[in-house]
Image (tube, rainbow over all chains, first blue to last red; front, side):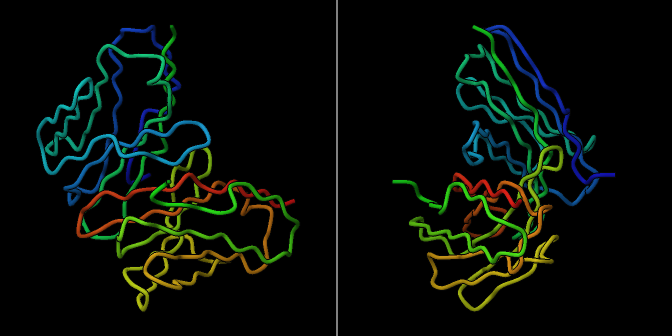
Length: 110
Length: 112
């Protein structure tokens, strides 16, 4: 079993829809949680960074962490074609190793 | 200019060749990392370095070596390339405990 499981997708939604992305994990020691966005032929770009449980909002993006269920989510409101990318969840408990999900590819149709 | 720069961006080479991928950063971060990305497997850590004198193996270091020439430069070498090392390679940097990592745009490496 992988340490971090991410819904594989792909996901295709119409412009303006809410995109919901999810990851589950097995290591209860994880306490720092991240979402990265990766466009084709580019490196992962940090989108959201949260510590411990709770919600964090940044513009159209909301990250949720539920440590009791070992579950994290990213919501994208009012999705735009420019949101079409692969989204990676990542998490860590120590100071060097990030554990990544395999990524979910999202396409927002105009 | 990009904060984390990787060269080359693309490379095609033959089995058995020695390959060096280079990474330089202007972020002033002490910690640098090398990852490979394969479809369905996500990002896997090859090597990491906390400073010039501190280099450590990651989860998939066999067949790879690294050199930290300066705080800002971290190179990855494939001593004798093999086809299953065909992948996207990313360099990343970070600051302290639990901090997010910042990635370059990668090197697409194909080994024939």
